[in-house]
Image 1: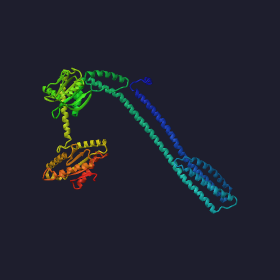
Image 2: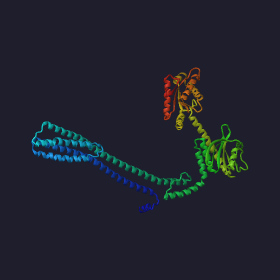
Image 3: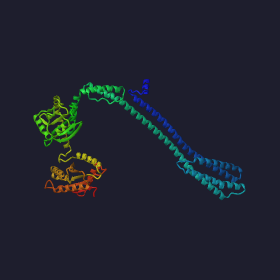
Image 4: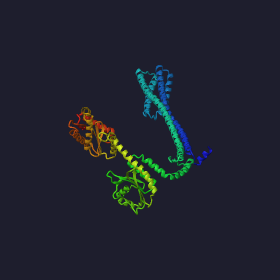
Length: 600
């Protein structure tokens, strides 16, 4: 423990030093959170309690004010009835109490945040009480002391003024009691909220601390586990696991650094084997022809260092062209037709043997491409025939800027890999063919619904990024009464109608349009860069052509059409729903017609 503290003070790195520092920081934050939280809670409670106390004091002072006036009224009435001067003592005492209560009320009623007008209401209440004393209390006492008599009418007016005071006081008392209850409830709610917030902050800090500690432990244990995997892999003779990425300068970092030095030496020795294995593994997993080209060329360039590597094969027209190449580390997939260079390639393929041109100053193929390569410094090349058994598909070409760069051993090594590259190319072509078949309808040959949904999403994404004025349209069409047709003429004749309609769609639409068999007797057409009006024109042209061009003289085939235009904000499902609604309206309106959404 003493050494740990010493290392921390000296800022020395050791395993777990960062975790200890983070833990200390979290402890400080936790203590500060408690101190600040409870200090704030104390101040908040004090402020809220003072407000509750103020409203309670207001209630007591109102009661004192009322009692003082009641004492005056009681003493005055007793004196008026009995003319006994003893009753004037409570009258005078009530007057003094009223003055004290008034002063306390006026002082306490200032700065009521909830109702700034309460102070004025209390002023009016005090003035009402003072009015009773000035106009009725004192004058009637003096009149009786002088030997006079108080009439019933005078008593009634005094009572009315006293009742007015009590009514005002009762109304103010109700407000003050409501204010007291409100402030008491608000104080409790604020305490609850403070407890909740402090608790949430505490829980958040704890969770964050656990997360940081867990991340720190993972950061320590993961490189140890990865290093153990790497060691196990190296012991078995296969360099499979990567060394951990660990930059901290401590015991683990030093161990990994030394192991990296050993690993580099082993990798240098096994470089050729690794690249061959990588090529075999990756090229068999390639999903398309471009990926086969890229992986093959990258692997060949890694196996046999060179300045340029390319693949040449025949097009559908049986002319040779460069399909892909890597130069200066950059992969290019571009079809570049060969001209005079093709003569040398034909001669090489007829000979049936791969070739090394050790010195281009002595011999090289003639043509503008090779001339350009020579001007760029190429001085030697190696040409490997890509074949599998007796079938030849092209050439693998390596170029270097030095003379005699390639050896017979290099040629033999690539000749062994040649069948594997051909197999990968065949697999990629077959995969593309199967994927193409999976996106077409087997009966009509049109694109199927799966392809339609993919293209529709791409169109929407594309048109969102283009000019807002550009749009596209969707046509949904349905063969009218197709179920009745099948029941009458049979399913074979129904299939003939669907094939006929599919050919009609392919003939009537533009090359950029996408006709689709949507399902059953329903078809769809995506019309890029076509507004609603253009979609209606295309649909009307197809409708008329279908009506007059039946696949058989025995019957006439018609279809109903729904057209919808994509607008900003519409999803694929909403666009299909719009076209489907228009199609439904066309059927409801008698079939064999075109309806656009919204219906114009």
